[in-house]
Image (cartoon, rainbow, N blue to C red):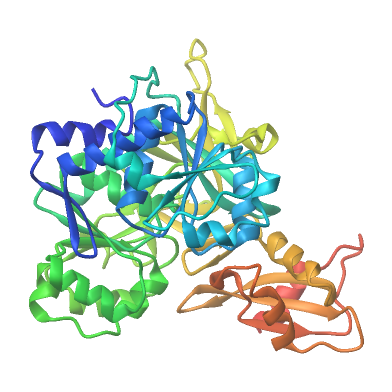
Length: 519
């Protein structure tokens, strides 16, 4: 019975031990190899004092050890916290402090970047991946991943069940720093089984993993592969041509990416045999431009396109049947297997066809809430009452914050967001976090961050500012932001003004500012 996420790997290691599970660079692990590595790491974690539901933060680029650490944490009874490797020290420090992680798994070079932030966290033990182990400094102990692999300790069984927390995925909110979405083992297993069902995945598939594993859709590439015994190829994205080469080298049959990446991939030459081998391709994290969709379909003539919508709070919500792509341009489809998607008015009643309402997701994929934030959890995860079934205890559903409309046949189309979140390059970016970073430079007196529609990125980030001193150059502010923000959060444009417009209540007039910079 699959009650914990690590059972996806453990089961296949027993039934098909010699099948390829993971490839990274020149190394391929079988399912038995991958499970042995995870078990050794689980024993090491328990040897360092890991208790049930302790958090283990993993700050690594995509590699075999990252996957092993994820499944090891589950096998040891902990909660894994994958951190996007492109984040800078301030963001990593926030995640470490907020999650209360006691153990950090990282590499020597990444650890060196965190010297200024670890002191404000609960991290007591650091496991270092790679051959180079730095000298101990600070209040945390240092341990070698390789040593733990070489002398494995059998982990003790845990009593974790399927509704217990398994992971915390950090995602930006509209009002500040990233918040942690807590996913249960049931969420992750149900998501893997649902996605693999509608994509038709089998053990014959070779799935290319190009999205970060800290991103719900990225993590899904691994769990979906393991759910059916497919072969997952790990790749840290560099250039579009490299993706085509990787697909050619490994015989990739399926991959998922965000629209800005697909736009790039549509512009590179694909060997005919490689393009024809692709059985499906999927897009998530934003609207797919029609021109890009058409170009991809011309390139991957044998592949079915899956246009998907999801939110971290429910892992995945809808997909558009490939047979409906031409008939329903712009639609996000219907609910994935084992989920129900409702379109509701503010009072909780159902919208009629053609009437815009908020997308509400119910079912096994609804997350447990926001880590250590009951107020936000209560706002987004709310009871859903079933009319005519007064005997039934209310269930929790997730209110997405997205406005959608359903047609007469139940197909959904995206209308817009309720909040001011910026969606760029597949990431959700908080305007408040951007503004706080700009204020921290000391170069601006006022700042408003907005997203402007962009065919390549979804939205591009524009900062509208007033200088703190006598003068300010755009390049000066961007340069000051570069050390504290990852590349995808840097503004594409800085507009410098003498004053910013305000509403009658004295707040910045964000709608007006956005309309002005979008004109």
